[in-house]
Length: 550
Image (cartoon, rainbow, N blue to C red; front, side, top):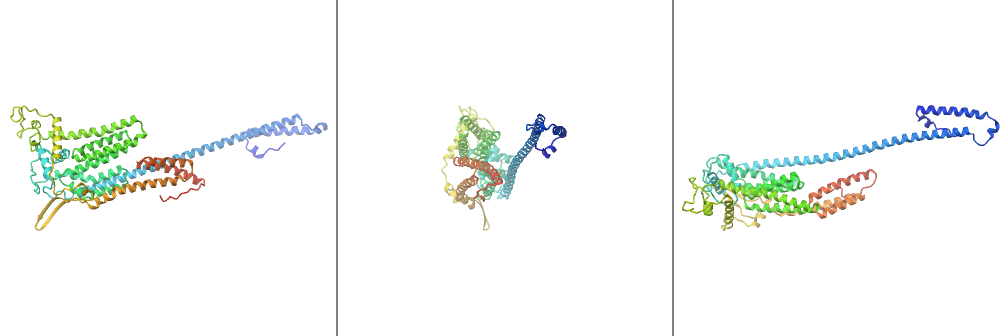
């Protein structure tokens, strides 16, 4: 019988140690008795029953001990595995939390950068636009017309203009808040202003012009343009001479530029949100409101209306393959409702306010029909009746009919204009800043002269025309090339999952034109492949890379 190993006995608990010692004592006594037995029995080759019993008991005890040791070792190994697994899960969770914290930190940094640049552009815009905004204290260029419109509003005398009334109403409201009563006649240019009421009339265009650089920056950021390029766009608007001149006097162009840019900014901001989400509904409704304000200032803003419409159609086409027809139709209905409803309300509402604010006869009566003039009051405030000789049997128009006739008359007057302007230019001359410099104001005194011209900054205009579209194309293809080369680099890691991921993203790049979607997809792919590359490097697998500098 083989001797028992010491390490087995030492690893036993106390109760089992006592049992083993007792069994050994009994076994030794039986062995001594067996030695003193007869010689016939000692010479027998077959073992006795007692010896067999002892051997069987010993082997059973030894197997039981080994079994207990193995169970204890298995428990220890299981605990170690669970402990290592929990550590691995905790490490992965910590890495995920660190990545999420890093992304949130990057988003906060970009947000702070946007706020800082926007604030700086607003401050610079206010400084450049309100600097010497009282000079000259005379009627400049078309201030003769728009100042006269404000005076007629405050006196309630009806007039007709070729442009919708929204901006003129806003300018009049600000002037009325400043105390202007409409008593001053803008009968000629170069006439000196009496008092400071002209500053209140100039305030809204100057203020809207001050915000244009910041809105240009925000519009570019809404298009997912980098902060540096977006800041350059805002700086170009800030330094443009024509924009500065157009927004420093009693003109509606500054207000028009403000709502045009704001509409572009809002439509891209709305489509950056998840479609049919609460944020998307909010920004899309603001887009319709801003579009209604822009179109209610000048009919030239219909170009922005077309831009918004084309943008929404392109977005719907891009989302169509990923959604059902029912969802697409509902999305189209919501877009149309959120844009067209506020547009129609603001556009026609501005004409309603225009008519309510002009109840008396004025210089615009000659353009209107007798039915329209029948609703106007006389200069003494008397209501016209069918008993009057000029209006016998004439029924005054309702408000809806009056708005309809007013829009029709404005369109006919606008189409009927055939007069030319000495400073007029063709559309192609504006592209490269070859248009004629528009003289706003001049003053000659003692051989010296002062002039105010509206002319574009050649660096801004020519640079935008020559390098704007071309630069966008170059950046687009370079970005796509960079993305493909980066994917080739990460696909060289050699794993099947990396190759499949590379193929899926490559197909997505070839199928879509949305750079933002491509960028997001690439970021996710790079993170996944980088994790796998780290694990391969940790296991000693070589990594083939030839585009690490990218």
